[in-house]
Length: 395
Image: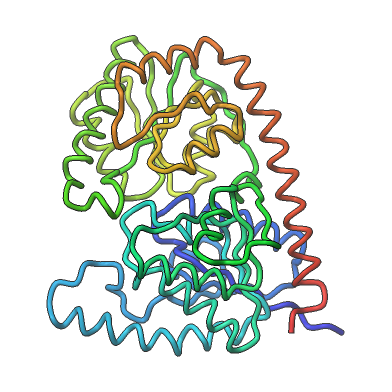
């Protein structure tokens, strides 16, 4: 009798990013349905949260608990450096215990937001290199990628991708980014973002209501010197837009995509103090989708807030921070309803929103049809993963 497959899941999970956790939940749902006997363990950023929420065996991603805090002195610098060495041993030991390790979606090969090469890119490189060393397959599934402007980051991300056994991307620009970084992508395929595989809830819709997804946006790596100015401009424009909705008597529900975004929600609610504004209490992508299903239209910044709205076939406007937002919107038929979070054109935003509402019925039908195709493609990818890695083990 063939022993149960040992499957590891790896990533910044349970760390406050709802999109990351949603991608994880989609893969976990697939594994529990198609491979119910598999022994699943997780190496992640928030092991206590993942263990309590999903009942899984977990291991911390990093030995040093202050890994993602800015070093404040010689001791913390030394601890970080020592932790990098310890993590080589820890990661290799964990990978050796698995038959296959799946990195479930996320922008693990991206550098669109502030990122240091020796943070998560280094952890991902350790994973891929450990897999090669001990003979465990590493699968990067429906991941996002971009070409970093920093040479070291670009090199670390490139090698992390190159050493993986399987790669698929959530859009064509991600695949092309890996090609640009020297990875042979000939056999790599593009599939939808994993969160499209999550079930879509249905709640009664509040008439004329608008969901507004906000982000603690401070630009990318190249914007560190003016990060505060970018943040203040973004929050000011989002506050103005919500104020305009409220002045028109519209109920507004505010959404987050990461726990860090709660500060923006608080600032908007404190500034406007209107009974028409409510903040959705959400800690998972499923909760975001359930709360979002009760609004008529959505305006959002976080990639996975936009994805939730599209999954629900809501007329959606993206105020995005990376090209992936525009690619997603175009794929689902809403490419003309996009803005840049870095430089919001407020008057254009108001005009776009008016057109979005005037064409709501037409656009919802387009999004629903294209969304169904995303689900079909993900079923195809899951079948490919099962055939390649899981039926008879991968050793």
